[in-house]
Length: 504
Image 1 (cartoon, helix red, strand yellow):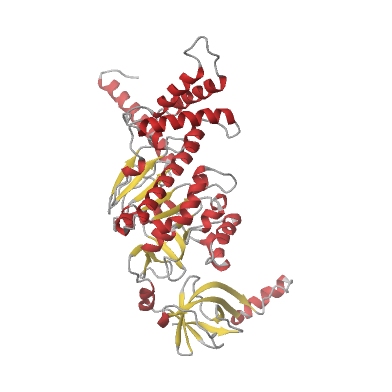
Image 2 (cartoon, one colour):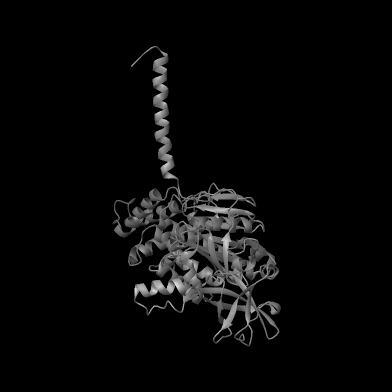
């Protein structure tokens, strides 16, 4: 099928065409010239009429012309050149000859494009529902991914589809679940392993536990006393003290002995007492977080499972500490495996981390422990088998450094211009024409681009076949059902009264 004819000056990256039929943005086309069959994508369309140009300001004249000038209508479009179909999609070295016909790409050509070694099926082409869109799994796992969308655009469904597809490869997935969406989820290809946010303080770094104890960096004397107690507790546990002994209790006992509280003749050290009080306050505040017998969280990760860390009951401050704690431990463990020289050991430690609410965990305008470790894993993780997926409905507030390390993107509907600009600045392969399509995407439709796909693609994401909790709540129906139940109960009580012989 002829889509149009190339006109004007052409380049190695794009061509302009004129058509007498309206094609669709996102459709793939082929152009044959100089012995090549080049694949392209329609990225822009304009419909116009030479007789009805914007310089005419007379309404009646426009009305008359519109009745007789229908034949002057034209359709102009722009095709982005993607590469030679017969040469592994290498970009051509010569531009298209003007006057060359542009054809709609055949189904067999597209199926070959989306044939990959380790397929992850995301859905079908928006404009050709009979063509499956498969992306390559390995670039997702090693080169990171961002899933971005405005609220209600289908983000949770997309994440669930991705998780289920990765489970078919038995990939260990770790979800930082900020709202408990995946705690009760069910996936056809694997099980959910819910991990409670329990930390054994002995596995924490000094700066992590100091932050939870609320000891500011400028409190030099308090920090010195706290470090001494931290080192003492670490040495005690390393020397064979029972694992069930509370790390914080060891610190507190050390400080109490140092404070002078037990000796009436000694002068009480107020700074030491202040640190003791902060430890006591933290033990109360984080009673559900600190467990002296808890194993390292990453030791709970199961292969072939969605490992879900339920963060719905903790505040953002604690969530940040937990994320940094887990990412740091995972990177450290993977580096140790890499130093052993055993590639199989390194692969055993591979994890794909999914971070919901990435704008909270890696904020653009403020520093946090989680952001620093997200940035570090984004930069170094691919060498050690650690992958990241940043998920957010507010891309403009996600740290640019972290977002730019995501070499793959699934972008659903985005309307706000600042969101669009921020995403485009973080992605080399997101053209302005594709950005212009983001506000017009329907629910569940997405632009897919990056190393996981040979070509940028407009995809209708599959509907998740399992069970999740990411949908909006049906609040109106809930309260309507309460009213209905109350009416039914009143009617039942009235009937019982009548049956007992009473009359109103």
